[in-house]
Image (cartoon, rainbow, N blue to C red; front, side, top):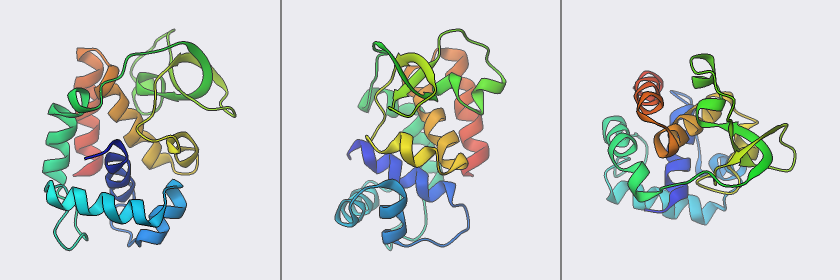
Length: 164
């Protein structure tokens, strides 16, 4: 598995029941078509998407996010930069958690200054600004990667509601 495999799976999850094509994912995420194809192959082998690559294995994805994400793709907050809010600083967690220390994905066109968190793929901030549901899923994943116990608990509850 590679970090952007999670990005691809969550983009599909954000689409809900809407149909999708690999070329759509490629355009919307800014990831090449061949990388999307390889990502889906790895996810099928890992049991995160069906063998025909049409159906997400939602419970498997949730298990991986809850129990494995922070170990496989760990992250420590970095220097203060301008960017796009993530983790508890972004919706939906920002509605429940008040914090003066926002986490952000570094992004030149971002409007918030905070501690930097490297996204799972460099194109994530740009893609998130175009899709609110995808943004919520990616921010919740960052809460699992860098959050404290309360943030993690709220994030997994919200992920379950949104993915299942």
